[in-house]
Image (cartoon, rainbow, N blue to C red; front, side, top):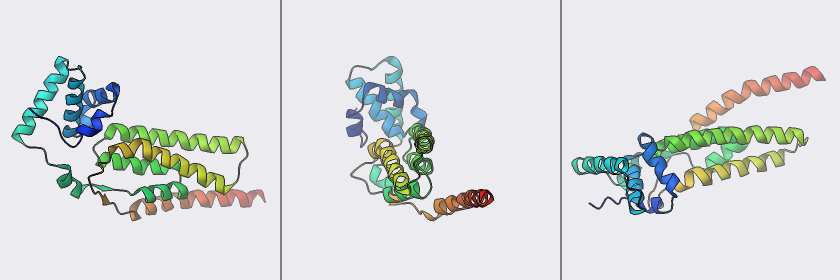
Length: 200
């Protein structure tokens, strides 16, 4: 049976370990993506009994209930835009932007990567704060540039490979994360200003 789908071209570019992630954590991914990864592993000679068994189950399920095309599914996929994610990182932090990227990945049915990007964003933000403090850098320009760099790297590494160039995704509303971000920032800003006033 020809089990190729719109994920197949993406799987060709992946390493063996990346493909096996789809097998080992198959419940975290779309069935179409898992099936494409298993087919690619089989082509490369890694068709062990466990892989072939899961592949057969997914193929049988596809025959019974044909998988919809990405163009049909994409109508319901809303993602935060690249520009908004970059802006969010400047306004709040790289960690805050990593949460938005993680939410995008959940919409793209990649829960494993969503956890990884949030941890990466947290690590980057902590390192950024530590280095700027250790080097006594107070320039807002450097803070903005390093934040933009961090968000850009996370987006390119985690989100870009998951997007299908033949698909048009819907832009998700940005008012909710902005509101939450500002509500969280207000108490922090208040305590900072209060502390500064106390030292004068």
